[in-house]
Image 1 (tube, helix red, strand yellow):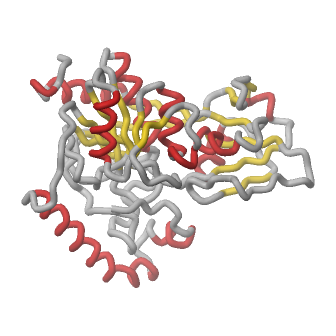
Image 2 (cartoon, rainbow, N blue to C red; image 1 turned 120 degrees about the horizontal axis):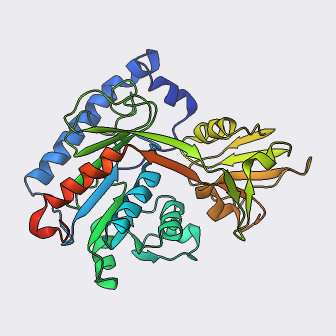
Image 3 (tube, rainbow, N blue to C red; image 1 turned 120 degrees about the vertical axis):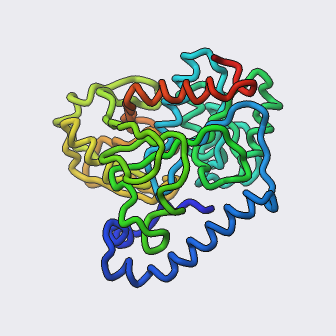
Length: 338
């Protein structure tokens, strides 16, 4: 299944309700549903093969096209596992990268080759990260290179059924399931509800499904960071002319969080998800202070090391981690923790 992250604003608006445009596209969504059921059936019948890397696999993904805040949840899960004594590794497809091979993502890897989100995870969590178009290939390469790894977290891949998994975590943003229709009439990649183990949501919990739901609160850190690691408290930026940039699936969310933190950028620039910034020109009409997400910073810092990145903080209801630990303990012989 392909990621759909650069839908037009008009289409995103249409996905929130069953209006004229959504109804016009609805027949195509029926075809989408047929393909989803067929594909899932082929995997269930083992006509399409899947494989397991031999250690517990947690997939953090979503059923909604575009950004749902998966990567911050992945990082929170990884840090929790580390605190519990696990030795986690992370696999990802690495959306937006120019390379197509299976490779390790190192803290100094070029964003264009590694993907911005895997690079962010590698830098912030300091765990082995591998990317490949086939997540199973990435998981196998990770285990071969790091035989001490005893659990794998997959960033995205809820629909990537070639990688067998033990626990599925489904993440929803503030829009929930939107109008509840499949692509292209709605935002859903596959019908909801569908079986998952745990649900993490911003805003109202999605209706349907039997999985326990846990609220997620997102906020910005109180300080921004430069490429050299120096930090600036956000309150010191309130009098500076700010240009806020966001090359993410939902740039408006970042701009809104800046306002909630007391900052009012003079200009905001929403760019396509995974934007590489190679062709971007800094405005010359005013000495703007550039402010961006951590995901953007990996690429923006190459040309503008003075840009300020504001880390996103995610707080998930504590019961989520208790439920996750219980799921891991129930895996039995595959799990090395109790």
